[in-house]
Image (tube, rainbow, N blue to C red):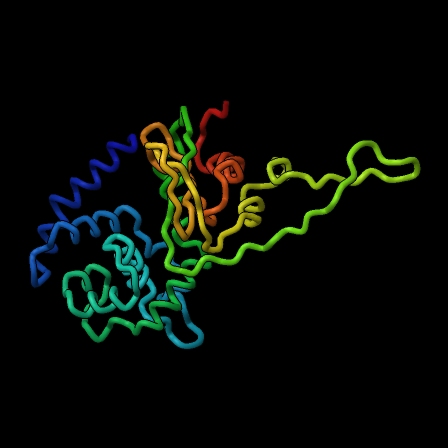
Length: 272
């Protein structure tokens, strides 16, 4: 079954079976954005990839509903809540959202600090990358990708831009060295080093702190922003195969080689 057919079947099942059932169980009819959240949660099934699940933990203090917190993590991104406090407030005040995420009662919603610790664990474990890689392998692993396009987009951050480290310039004499002098070794460029590295090793050496980026838009005007840059590999249909988040100042060419290597373990495509 092709990807479009799988998605159409899933969306049809959700629309015809799940939504009517939820309308009967929930106190308020579902809104359009809540239906959109349900579709995303059914497609990604993020709770299957949550590390340190509460159901599997036997030692130490119990972890509060990490599967439900993971679904709330997706809800925060879909509803564009900038602060964890805003997400928690909506979970406590909106019964539909609370039950969609998996919190039965209002008092089951954890504290803001619990949310923050869980979100930090998900970020450290790369939960989003794990879920995305699984979806790509499941739906595109058996297909031949004809073309892979590289592009990047600006991500505005709320942090203060990090100060740039000034590099000390080493004075080099021009021309050939004098008799008895040794040739000064030339520092290899990053692109040359990346050719012999794996994708994960090359990505770890890229800057990920919040800083200032400059880019020329489609109309030819220069745009600046504080934050990060999201680099994507997409197939012919525009579906992302790989994603790498770097500092806003990182040039697209510095991420091109790792991005080319990332999809090779998930899909089959023609490299030209």
